[in-house]
Length: 313
Figure 1: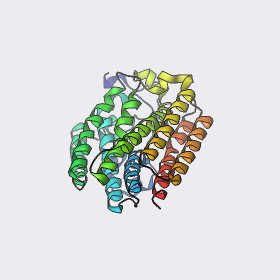
Figure 2: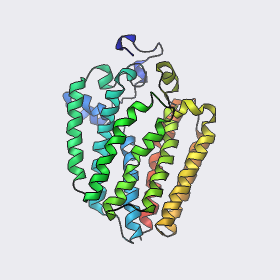
Figure 3: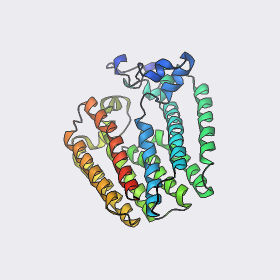
Figure 4: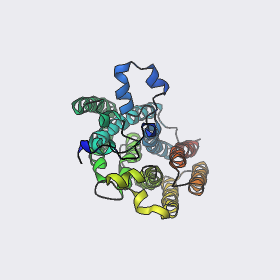
């Protein structure tokens, strides 16, 4: 797909997903702003969705031992999620730069627009990965190797939308690796509760990222990339019931395997109620509605985390 083909006829600069008025972008020096936009500093929801499975894994392991999550590990994972989400954005934008230039929502992203050159983006990526490695090396040896292995998932993900209608499934594998890593950081191994939690996260991601993908379905059709939004179409709500229902069941299985008390189940019940609200109130033909439901999943993260932490009290 050549750059000279230009954006689709429906392109509008006002459709960009970059918030130029964000306070961090306004306060940052001008040379730094393109790199902050590249890592989506104005849209932290991606960092939250990467972080919560990590915190869930830490809290699940800690509560299974009857204690609170280690604050140092919580902070390390927060920093790691920010850095690795940023690195993932760079990888994604490098891989998708020609496609992004043809999609109204993404055409003004720094790499797609040429504001940041490919060599500079690669250098920036290298810096981010070095920072991520420095954070990872603070963990126990088993967790270090487990965390490093996730880079394979990160590298493959951006290319799957070209070959399958289910890239959201691979995103689930990638974004929820932290559930395994959180448990491993706390216990130095893997066990059934962590595996159930990982499965729950994958189902959760299938749900929320399908909702997200409905924003781009018209442009995706024009440029020839695939998603679960295009695959499921009008049947999306029925599938979401399945995705979110499976996430709820697997979260309960993780809690049962860890033998946690009732506050953890209360968190799952509240999360299930939120899932139901998302499905009932979703309008797949309204991009603003889809984006709001997608972003609301940060509340799911907090609700489940709250239940897991309360179970240790």
